[in-house]
Amino acid sequence: MTRRILAVALLAALAARADEEVFPCDRADGFQTGPDGLLSAEGGNLVLAYEREKMAPLAGTALVTELKELRLRVRSGETGTFVAVLKDRDGATFNQPFALKAGEWTDVVLPAAKFALNHDSAANKPRLKPADLGAGWLILDAAAIVGGGKGRNELRVDEVKVVREDLEETTGDWIVDTEVTVARSRRHAGRIEVRAGGRLLVTAPRFVAAGELTLAGGTAEFSGGAVVVPQRFQHERDFRLSGSARLAFLDALLVTGFPAGLKLTGAQDVSLVRTECLGGFTCEVPPGARVTLTDTKSPGEFIIAPGGVVNVSRCENVILWHALGANLKGALRFPGPDVGDRWTSGHGLDVTVEKSKGIRWTLLSLPGAAGSVEDCSPMAAGLLFGGKSSIALEDVQDGRTVVEWRVPAPDRSLTFRNATVGAWNVYASDDAVVRVRKSTIGEAMTFGKGRIELEDTTVDGKGGYVGAHDDGTIRLVRCRLTCLAVARHRSRLELVECDVQGDVRATDAARVVLERTSVSGRTEADPGATLERK
Image (cartoon, rainbow, N blue to C red):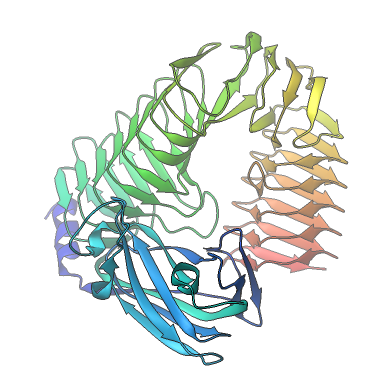
């Protein structure tokens, strides 16, 4: 038997896997409400406070594709009728009412088969098809719709469980070197490698890739269903493309939770057409690579180098990073977030945008730049320092308009003039050392053996998070973080007298040191990593 045939035989032999997901209610993460509701976590419960005559839904972001049941353990301060609502990917909305008695904990079970079409549904369908559902559910007090309830109410939720149809379960290395079609929902725990001449076509309602996907010259196409990439934090998992690989999403829902890595090396092709993303990708677009985005929502962020091609048409919420090194000559002015007529970037960058909304313009400052960014409001500006640079930054502030400011680095001449940068991101690679004092920045990351030292500074997460990678070091003293802080690979992350409003993680063989530091979120160290408190 060849390795491919052996792998296929193994895949076929494995049984289905029950798919139940429990969402803890001791934190408000993953839940939302409207402007008329107040959402908090208290005593291990999710708590929604609201006025009954106002619309204040409790919404969850869980994947509900192929839903069997939505289960809630819930208590209302007032007796009343409540309604659960689901919306499919065609815009059709469905509801199922349920009753709660004042002060009583109730286990509510909402079978998908009992949801009925809303009278005002944007799309008319005879019944709910669970395979057509995407992500998200909500419940609300019917008093806001039909009347009959007044005063303030408090809704407490102790547990949320989403029960979906069973998945076929496969594990291990999966090598694809011919054409393979996956038509039944599947979860694969392990590496998937599609080699030159191989084509993986996934048409299943759900496909869970719980591992790395490598396209070594092959093709992967995801058509029509939900593609799930489980992650605990940003960039935990990567899709890697090499050779003449091609990756395509068509009429799909991509759920990564946080941005996943999309690694291109050169002449690869990526396309997302009529696809909605929850989390999306962080994708570097090197020379020779091509990315096409059409009728797509929130695909993530794309860092475009000279020679890379990105075409955006009829899309929403795309983050476009323009790498500005020696290619920048003269002034660059970004348009507003909504683009009608065709806009091209120039400055040696092949970026085209048309008929799109919510475009978030960003830039990455590299050595060799000889120009300016003027009269615009980039969402973020990344400052990348490498080599043996020694850089000092002070009083750099997210969201503050600068009349004129030049990046204090001898290897470039980049000036911001009449520009408002939403988030300043600081990166150190190679053997560079960057010191930041008395500032508010959006992100801090090290690569290689880079080192970043932050003092009396806030990292607000508007540009990302704090991340030490490779053999780098990040040291924070008297800092405030409202984002994730993570150390990966063999890096070191030190926090001294800091306040962290978020999670702190150590993965791979990394080390995190917390000295006189408070953390409101989770502190976790994977096997092989170290998290030390002093």
